Length: 267
Image (cartoon, rainbow, N blue to C red; front, side):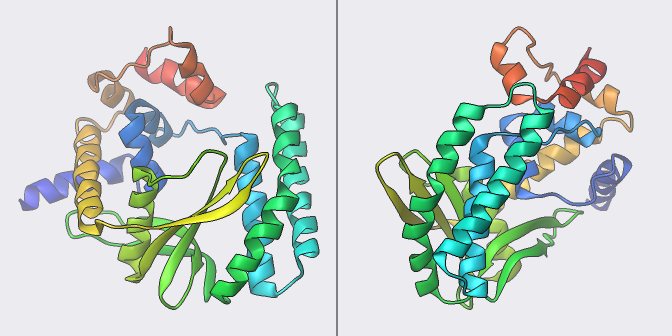
């Protein structure tokens, strides 16, 4: 058993994996080939108007509940952040989605007017964007993440969506890590916005032990995959995970650097 632990530890060490985040674990589950490419150092900053919108909403809410500023001031800050990120994307992305960005920004005012009073009723959080980590006995590197809002009795993670919210396994695993690090009740808050409505829908994350076990099993698979070689190209060649370049959707979910890395590592 000690030899197995040492092998796994060296597998992460020799490929420069110093910690695992919930997003890395979820990426391995959904797209292990892309995770390998990321481990090899080929990464792209994802861009979608929905991401920019989520960041802007989070900033507006956080400043309102932590600093006590008015909704209008929060909206100004959120709009400023949205415009800044979108301007950078417009200048650097050939596939910039100006129509999508315009539609998302139009929702900001109504969303913050509805949601900020709810969060103010929760009280002032004791921490925001707090770095947390947790060590599991069977995993040689820490689980690490940044929780959105921490209160005395719970941690809350903010998500934005235009589809009717429901429990999501990826988010549940993310909140499980936050629970393990803080021992507090994990809550997912969906800011649900359409052209007609804006509301906050919350779910308590249940089955913590189940999600913890799933994380442990997944990380074990990640360790074994990396342990076959200290050469990342050989790891990829032996993984039987060759990306399908004939699939148009493949090009939509991989960035340019990741595509370059995949071509070098898998072909």
